[in-house]
Length: 303
Image (cartoon, rainbow, N blue to C red; front, side):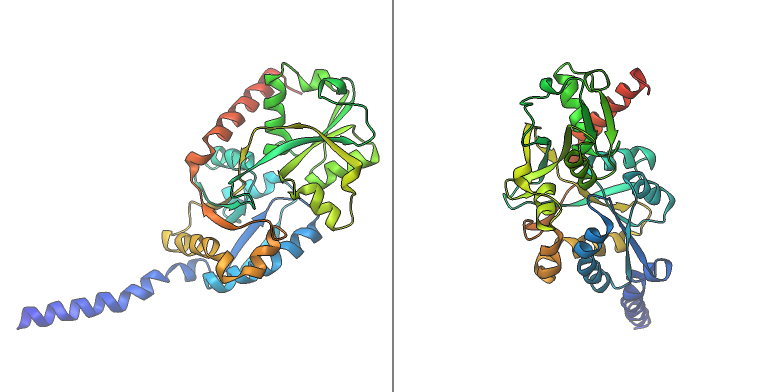
């Protein structure tokens, strides 16, 4: 009888303690920071993400603060230093974060586009009235890239150019880092560069079309003269230092967002995304290899 009573008491104690244990992380992380890369101007990012961040706060159970980073490196450094808990990165920026944090960053979610694919492309725009029909035609002219840690705005273009036997620094008159995809298109419109790399998902979803919706550009003013192979979707990442209970709560909030907060979710991609799906480090091996290539290229051709 005594052993049965002891066993029953122990069972009750374990059951009572379980919920408290599962919520222990709230005392350590009473607030979370979600940082996003600067794909557009800060006002556009805020408008796009604010409802989704409100949803995350409710779904996770603690306030989530949106941090709009000045550049890709800021998100990476935030993840390394512990100031950022969830970070939306481009695939190349994730590969860089993996190196910088010694693997202490986890890609866990990526957006599926309207065509049902977890991927996007790098395209090269010229102005519609430009006579250039190919990258070769741009010899001696100015090129806009986006950010050294951007996949579609730097690493994929450089990799593709290398496969063509083109050294960008020798082929183009000047290479300008615009800082964001919107800035690259704007610089092209203003004549600061003659061609600009940018992200492109489908015929109905791209950075350019988002700029058109905001009255910042006219689609007919530009032509695409190059399109890359598919790039793995931009991952949302978690700091590997977070407790597993918290990481699982965050994962579930993202995976269920399209059902639990459809309006906030739709605003993220102007209604062009279908859901967040699970991804892992293995999905980005090609980008890690590409980043290693770019690093080797920089060592061979220091600026």
